Length: 330
Length: 251
Image (cartoon, rainbow over all chains, first blue to last red; front, side, top):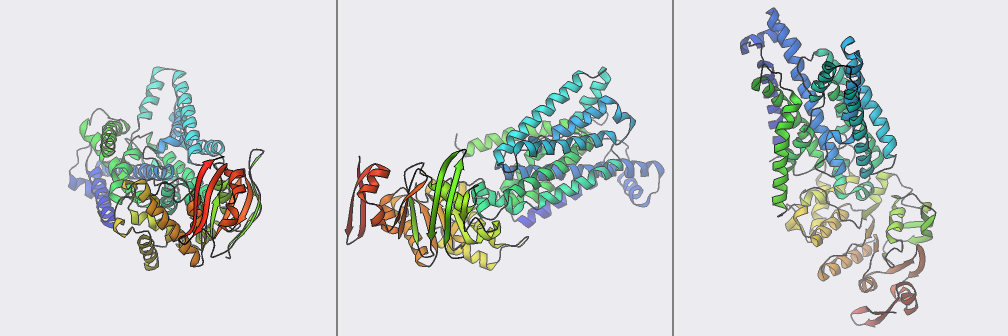
């Protein structure tokens, strides 16, 4: 498939799903009511539903989904490993730890921004630790090791917080938050996530040429004029900014950053640079679709978005492994 | 850019020198074979010369900026890595990376360089094939084509003909000799001393990180050097077909 055609199709898909996300929900508004409420501001309850509930939720799905897709593609390209995903470098885990601490201490209940703020702080600390651990000149391998160590540490600390939580309700709060969801988010969340997300996208979008050159390995890429130290710094900070912001507002949503680049890779001729934009669009589409699905499947039970993406993603991933194995003739 | 100058180049792994105090002047038009037993420091010397390793002393290449170095020298690492199933043409096109400005798309000049590199490596029919689906030897040729597409005045190659069939070993060495004759500088680490003797204009012999001999093949591949460095006895003769070198036994 032509690359530009693919991008047009994916963009169209995102637009269609975005509109669908605005029109579907438990409030039971007709499409006509929804559109007129959104555009004209007529009809009190409908305006509230559209502008304060559905619109920020759909925007967040695009921001978080695109961040996950883009980060997944960038990390897979850098590590030259199709199994890499945004959670690998430990930023998601650390952001989640920050959020969980905010929930546990009650700060989250006292201030709206305490939870996402703590999560962003967690992501920031993670970046510092990661760069310190992996060293200034280290290669892809040390980054993976540092990321795994950091993820394990953040995971252990999160379990400790759960373990010490004062009552079952607090623990349930934490567990539900960690499943990842876009329900009941407001424009406050959008404005908080937006600058970090955009900054992260900007950093990652500039990595295309370097990631392409890394197809030949680190040594050859560096000899081709790619400054690997700088590339890695931009990668880590970029992933941390947009994925950290995503975790801060939506919790940890898995599999999107793993599956989307994997699905789209054959359609872009496996070129890491082309995969970046395609995966960003694909991630946005997948998260919009999943968020619509949680509203349609179990409208009254608040099915969590992260649960659905994992339920969808894991079998898909198994299928991909099976396909890869068949291609290798084993 | 005139050739490659190394002065007092040393590379240490911990306290141990892996490459010790090597000074060399390599000129455009030379096809230089870097020879020596395993662990002699051939790869390390080339990587340090490119500035890919921390080193003491100076290398004229390592002093260039990363982008300038990409236009001055093409580097073929020993590890033949092709991480993604991209097309052969795409992979060869990566050689154009140093010639593209920020955000610049490849133009007709780049396309011409890619086509020329593919043709020169006899790969034109492979252009649309997936690089990872090719055999090891074919991949090696694709990677050499990538280095050719870079159109750099210098080519540094680490065991470029290992794993190629005899015909492609000879065509590749012939290509290197031709590149040198066109005025480029080729520096290749080689284990096949016979091909090195036939096609290189100059050989550099290394042992345990040190330079042991440097000169035309006949002056480097002496019975004494062979016995001392490689532990080999060999047959060497000037024939109407050019120099013939055949290792005979371990001494």
